[in-house]
Image (cartoon, rainbow, N blue to C red; front, top):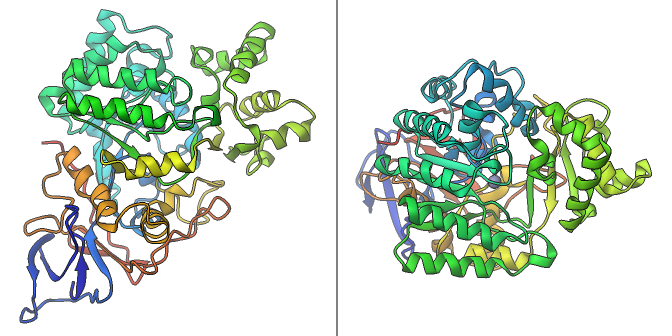
Length: 523
Ligand SMILES: [Zn+2]
């Protein structure tokens, strides 16, 4: 790769150099004028940096359906951390496989037709490997999935016997190469755990060098308490902590993310290994059913439907949801399965309410009933100021919270969040070049070496001799995201080449068909 400006991932100032690659490895950096090569990529006028390591994704099922992961690799992602927010497809028991499949329901058209025949994480890993992904994968095991295997959707903290079983399953998944445990403490069944249960599990991570990645117990008015819990879990277990998509949701709570960041800085000063990730958008995306308080999800899926319908529980739920103070005209239905609610796709909950002549919470309940709680939402919940503050913060790592989309037209994928296809070019174009929110070197650092260090991927995240040849070539003057809320599939602009394990996966901004990704093993 000749003539480019190297932004090497360390955060250091860029410099001009050629990069020589052989056998999937970076072999030489400098003036390589005299050297010969099988093929040459001219990077004159372009930046050459390490491949982006997306520390927070939900690609674990999509990659089985669309292993080419074009919407991911086209934006320069070469490694994805999968199994976040408490959800992983393994380990399963015969009984829990149906439940876990149901919990994945809002992730759209990826779930159907997968078979779900794997049980252990080793068997699922094999499925990932056989799919021959175009990007490297870093697997996490999900706490909700462990809980589904041991105690289904029972709404109570694990007993000591159940804890023992949870730990045994966690240890098996870690031995199968997982890099850590994720929790999603707003979504059941993970939400039914108490702090002690999670500390117990996190302690088991330490001997594996595993990471504790957490979607904390509340991102609205309980954010401070929720971050305090994450820090306590890290402190008492000794496990390194990654707080997922740090944000403060709901207009009334905006600005509090600074308080949360102060708490995290303070924990760092006390010696704790804790950081957080952020995606460059003011909207989030989650299952629509996440709005319904966790207690109402206990038991079978039919129990949730009964509680939505029955007088006393319906009334109670409406009171609690109203108290959340949500903006229904900012809550968009991004995808639904086929059925009576399909026409709500692309509309806000407020619009659905006025169309049906009912209040928005009644409309919400109707959509949940009509979709068997499978709908996905996009909700505009953050302030631009908060997003910029978090992106700039020295403890931030970039992660898209996105996922592999099916190749255009192959499945009905609705209107997914543009973060799936636009995260990294949006950071480099909009936030670095156009808005000057952070320097190019800093942005690349937070997208490469920072996540590599957090995950202990010693061969990744930098342009250095001996490092894996995962590289991105982009034009800093034109790079930008194409995906928007109304056109979420549009590819980015200005990213000409992406190299995964020494193989050219993107050439002249087109996917080549290369599938050189590996499922990484936590050694
Ligand atoms: Zn999450």
